[in-house]
Image 1 (cartoon, rainbow, N blue to C red):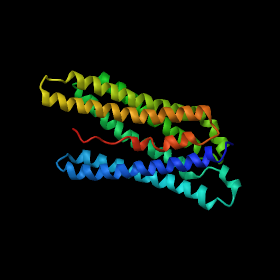
Image 2: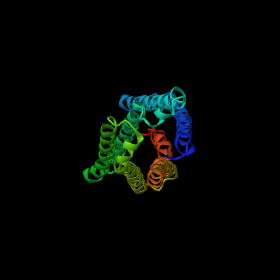
Image 3: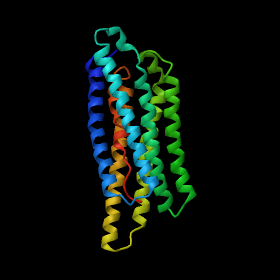
Image 4: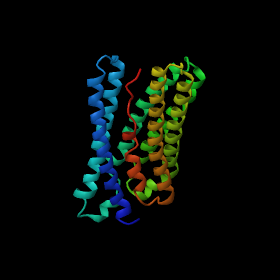
Length: 243
């Protein structure tokens, strides 16, 4: 096992960073409902679902942090055990990703003039990411220690790889399709430029967290640095208010 700084120190920093980003999620959700009251009900429901999933995720990682750093602090032998909430949080990270990525896949569908090939290509990797995450949770739930969890390193790495690939692919598709949508009029082209930058920034941030998590688990599989990055994956996604 790595040092306490590389394990529960990194773990605590991940929870803190995730809490900060959760605060951003709250602000974004508030401004969305205040600023876009005319949006259709299905978009509002999606934003609410993402917010609820994010809230549950934050509650789960906070619970696990409390167990490790408060409840079990006097029993060091328990620190090697896996708290159930640490495993279940992966599921809600995956649910958040699925909701946002399906929304963006619909943008690809509409911008591509309802191209089945373009939409299906994106949807395949979106579903693959979710299935891998659910598989990881199903395999990890029965495990009792972090030593056993290390046996799922390949599956965990696959989740991070598909996360990065999915977000880069969606961002690339949106940028390409938006670029093709230019009209030559300054006002509409300025809006397209903003949407392109939004697509790049959203995909880039999530991909960076996924790559950082992948590198961390590859270099230091016995440390929790990768967990700290993974905690922030769901927070780096948010539903854009454009339809």
